[in-house]
Image (cartoon, rainbow, N blue to C red; front, side, top):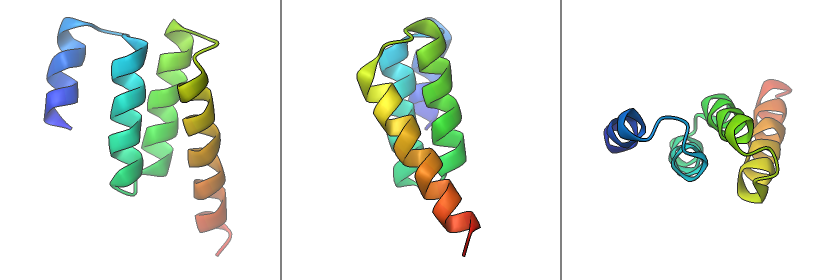
Length: 68
């Protein structure tokens, strides 16, 4: 995570960095944080397909965990 944070300091709001950070957060079991990172990527590039798909998957995962 620290490397993504450092990269984002240099390229704030870069959609690919935010989407990759979301993938790392998702792998770490932090689905809501990952969905938030995807939302930030979509603010910068609203039609970014990887960010849209990952956000949907993360929100679905968070909802399934919350319903257990």
